[in-house]
Structure formats: C-alpha cells, structure tokens
Length: 299
Image 1 (cartoon, rainbow, N blue to C red):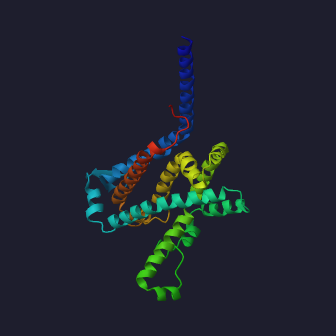
Image 2 (image 1 turned 135 degrees about the horizontal axis):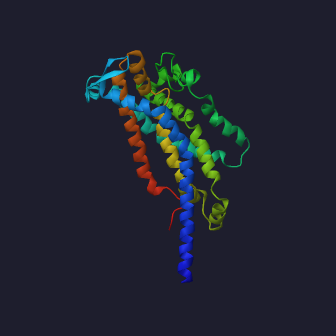
Image 3 (image 1 turned 30 degrees about the horizontal axis):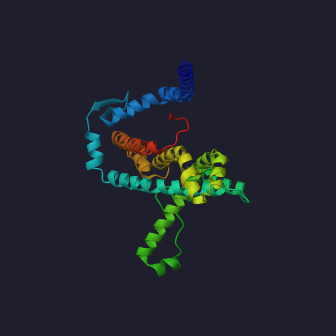
C-alpha cells in the first residue's frame, strides 16, 4: 500500500512539473499571441483575400472573387516565379546542412580552452552584429538595384585564365557558397556554444575513465545531447534563408507588389512561398523529433 501511495505521490509531483512547464510556455507565448492578434491578424486576412481576388476599387479595397486565377497566373504565365522559387529552394536545402556542419565544428573548436577564445567567438558573431541593409548587401555582392554581382570571393583573373571557364565556374560557385555559409552561421554558432556548455563535464570524465576516445565521446555524448539545439538551428536556418534580404524570391515578390503594382499576384506568390517554408520546417521537425534527446522524457 505504501508503495502504491509513493508511486501516486511521484505521479502527482511529476504532473505538477509538467503543468508548470506548460504554464511557463503559455506565459511566454501570450505577448506574441497578443501582437499577432493586434498587428498581424487583419493584414494576414487581407493578404489571403487578395490572393483569391482582383482589386475592383482601391477606395475601401473593394475586391471581386476570382478563385485560383492568381495562382494559375504565377505558375503557368509568369516566366520568373517558378525558376526563382526553385533556385531559392535548392540554395536553402544545400546551405542549411552546410551551415549546420560548419557552425557545429566552429562551436566545438572555440568551446575548447585556447588562446584568444573570446576574440574568435566575437569574430564569428560579427556578421550578425552588422545585420542586413545596404552594407550587408555590398558585402554579399548585392548592387544598389538588387542585382547580384557576386556572392563570394572573386577568383583572380590569372587563375581564371589558367583554369578555364568551366572549372572557374565551379570554383567560383564553391567560394560563393562558402561565403554565404560563413556569413549566415553566427547565430547557429552561439546556440551550439550554449548547448555544448550545458553538457555536464562528468559525462566526459566518466567516458575518459572507460577509455573512450574523443571521436567516440562526440558520437555517444556530444551529438545526442545537443540534438534539441540541432533541431532548433535547422528550423532557424531554413526560416533565415527563406526570409533573407538578399533572397531573390523575396526581392521578386517585393517588386511585383510595389513596383509592378500587381498586388493580387504578389499575394499569391507570398502564400505559396510561406506555405512551402512552413511545410519544410514541419518536415524537418517530423523527421528529427524521434532522434531529439529529451532530458525530461518519461522512461
């Protein structure tokens, strides 16, 4: 009887902890939910309505329902939307794992005791401090008109002449990719650093006593323990690349809306783009959640 009572007491305490965590989560969500309802609910509704309508009169924003006509236009008549969209998807799917690997390796290196550790931590976070805007566009090779000049380090002309056009193109693409990954990994490095510093040192000490190598400790301790940070970084990186100021898809939607004044088509593009990004983040969560370590999980 005492055993059952003890188990029931533990269950009540456990339920209390779970409820407390849920309450804390809702408390943190309340300001965001209020902001969404007050500032974003009506614009979102208007955007959805525009994507299925045509503007009859700008006074009072009178619209006429046209169904999927705007979506048909962007997929079958707009010659720029699909190629630009596919290019952005390709770049995001390629850059995301590169950012994960690069930021994790750098975080592990600068988490070690070394001379100048504080300097290197600051140096890798400088791109985040610079932010976006005109300076960032120039550093990433964006002209004032939004046209891409180069996104990475230029191959010297002498080397280009020796390598030839085809090989130079491959090398230039690699340098461009490395530049983008370097400039877009600052936040991920900081998050990985926080995750690495949260791992108890006693785990590594016990592993060393058992004769584990650095490689084995990485796969058996470090990687499993930071899987929640990996998942968070994957979602963050996908969103960051899809919403980046140098993203050609974002720039194209902006031009369609404010330059060409094709508001309905721009709204349809925005929602296709948003839904795909949402599905991609959801797929990443579904694929990775079974591998994510949860310290509070029940046995």
